[in-house]
Each structure stands twice: as C-alpha cells, then as structure tokens.
Length: 326
Image (cartoon, rainbow, N blue to C red; front, side, top):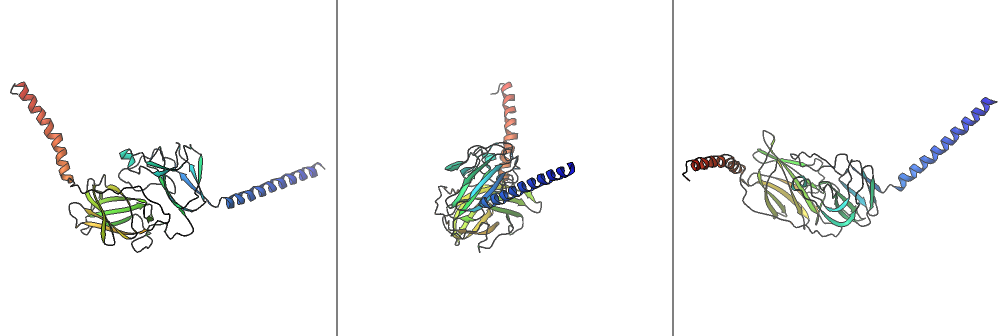
C-alpha cells in the first residue's frame, strides 16, 4: 500500500513537472514570435578599454553587429557585455581617430539611451525610416549605424562596385601600376547614399617588403561621371589614414588614391552612390585642401637638424661665453 501511494505521488509530480515545462515552452515560443521584430546588438567586453593597435585603423565591432538594417516600427535591444557603462546616442561619433585626436563626437538629439551598466540592456523603437548613426558619448570611438527601411527602398545593405555588383571581398586592395605600393580601402556605411557622411579608411603597404608606409603623402580624389568632385591631400599615419565625404549626386563613382609626389602612381576603386530614400539632408561639410606636403625625407632632415644642430649650437655659445667672446 505504501509503495502504491509513493508511485502515485511520483506520477503526480512527473505530470506537474511535464505540464509546467510545456507551459514554459509555449511561452518561450510565443515570446520568440512576439519579439521576432527585435534585433539584438551586443557591446563586447573590452569596448571601454580597446587598446587599439594604431597600425590597423580598420573598422572595429564596438557594437556587434556595427551596422544593421531593420524595418519601420522594429526595435533594437543593446546588451552591455562590457565591464563599464555605455550609451547609445544618435549622432556622429569621434571615429577610431578619436583615440589620437580626443574628439568627443556630436550628438544630434534624435535619441539617447543614457548610461546603462554591465549586464544591462536598453531598447529603442524606430518609427521612421532613415539612416541613424549613433555612438557612445563616453567612448566616442564606439560607433554604429541603423538603417530603417520603409516598404519602397532599393538600396542594398552591402557594398557594391560601380556596376552595382555586390563586393564579396571587403576591404578592397589594389596595387599601383609599378607594383611598389598596395593600398587597401573600406568604407562605412557599406551602402553609400546621398547626404550621409561616408568614412573611407585606407591602409598603405610598401612592396616587396610588405611594411606599412608611415608619413606617405597622398591625394584622395573622388570622381563621378568622369568629373572630379573632390580632392584633398594628406599624409599617412603609421600606414593608415581616413577621409569623410558626403555625396550630393548619385551614380557610378571612382575613389582614387594617388601619390602626392607622382600623380601617375595611383590606385582606384569603383562603387555606386544611391539616392537616399529617406529624404534627409546632411549638415556635414566636405573640406578639401591643396597645400604642399613635406616629403618624409625632408621631415627626417628637420628632425635631425633639431636633435643635432641645436645642442651643438648651445655648446658653442657656452664655450664662447666662458672665453668672454660674447
């Protein structure tokens, strides 16, 4: 009799456990269906203290994924897996170069999560189509992009060449005609539309040594419809550099990077600029320059002159002073 009672109790407990598990499974399935329009973006551990290798300024996944495409009325949930608090703030961040320039970024006031700590989340619902840039106000190198698409948009979510073919291998790499320099190029956002600032990141390598080219003077040129629309000059820093440009016209586009010392030595990459379907305007101002850059060799001579000539001059002055000749 005791054994029968024990068996009944055990059967009852198993039934209760099975029923509870069934209810939980149903709730889980329902929750997944209910949250099917929610995208999760993680903030990886170490984002607050990235210890970035400045010899590689390629885009990092401080928000993972960094760039997402959703539909109107979808929501995004950011999960903080880092050990420090962060924000999700609309606007243009300081970029990876903020680690060197101390740029703080520029909020635009569209949304701001405020601080949320480790293991915490924040959720934002996007009710209007558009491209939204965001960053962390505490760590401005952390940047992300949200594309909110309506029902009618033909802009791809991936990079394309000038013929609108998908680019599978990204970043792009190409050699100058003489084979002495290899230049890599990537850009964010990966799909280029009008009135949205595009960040172009370049890496420079000298061949056959395959070493990064520091203080290499170059020209950054953009052509549309065989017409030059932008030109600026700069010098690579530890083998890398970046430029930002907002397009006002659509169509096939050529990005050209040429040696400032020899314009016949260049590489070029093709892409396509689409009409922005969200009817937005950009407050970003394209800035070009045409100043004459010092060659790396000249800079080395100047440094040597400061290091060697200045101390010698001081020694001569001291000797002459002691001899009372001055």
